[in-house]
Image 1: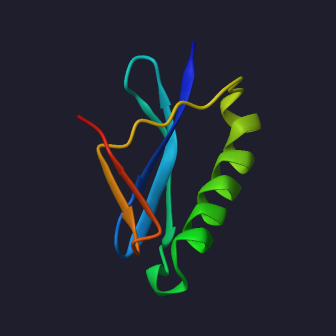
Image 2: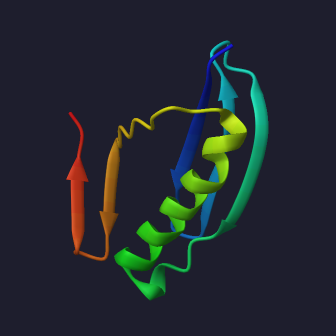
Image 3: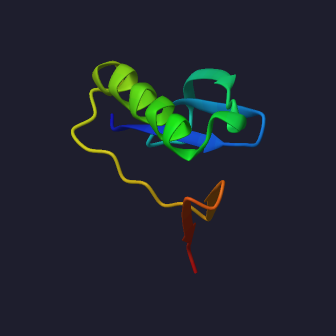
Length: 80
């Protein structure tokens, strides 16, 4: 069974977990975003999440597909 790391970066919380290829939520966690610390701090948190969950998910790679992401004007990514 393939497993995927899922991350939702919100203004107040980063919700993350592991989802199976059948869309079953296997693990669900969250932490404060602390947006006032800026984009690089949020990115550090996301990297930490991926590193922590990578072994648990037995993931070989991570694919990020943001719908809309803006981190205090430092990073702006838009997906069409």
